[in-house]
Each structure stands twice: as C-alpha cells, then as structure tokens.
Length: 66
Image 1: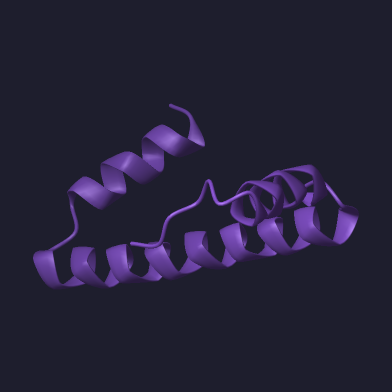
Image 2: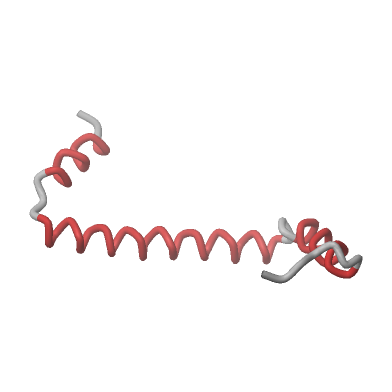
C-alpha cells in the first residue's frame, strides 16, 4: 500500500467532524501553496507577458468590466 493509499483509507475512517476539520485545513494548506506559487511566478517574471497582453487589450478598449 502506498502512502497516498494509506492516507485515503485513514480519511475514510474519520468521523464527520474530523473530516470537516481536515477539509478546512487542506483548503487553507492548498491555498497557501497556490499563493506562494503565484508570488514566485510574479517575482520571476513568468507572468509579465500575460500582464502586458491584458494591459494592451484594456488600453485598446477590448476589455469590459463585469
């Protein structure tokens, strides 16, 4: 059994309150990972091209507000 399979089996055994707590924790954990990745991508310049395209479209009147 792999580690992931063992974790999956353990999760299946959790009572509902613990499962809810795990879900909340994992959402926070994953959100923090996502934030760090975006920050890293911004700092490294990976998103510069996309930002330039978006600004160009906005300045050309091709963007609309919701």
